[in-house]
Image 1 (cartoon, one colour):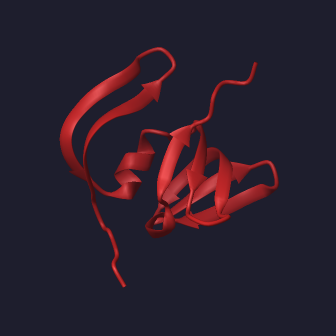
Image 2: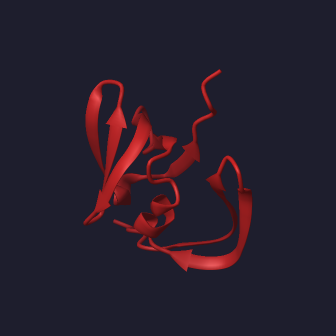
Length: 91
């Protein structure tokens, strides 16, 4: 079984509605470090197959992200996350 512990990429990361985007360049970081940029923001998290979650990232600790979702609190292992994207603002 292959486990990815670090993300290495050339990236532009969403920081906030005001600052829009910030260029990070080549970087290596853990998923927890990456998710910290989205703390207290609404996100979509995809874990593969039918595992799709959305809500507000409330906490990040010990490889677990706590998501405040419409159906309640959801805890997701950061090792299972394939993609994260900010949710568009509600109209």
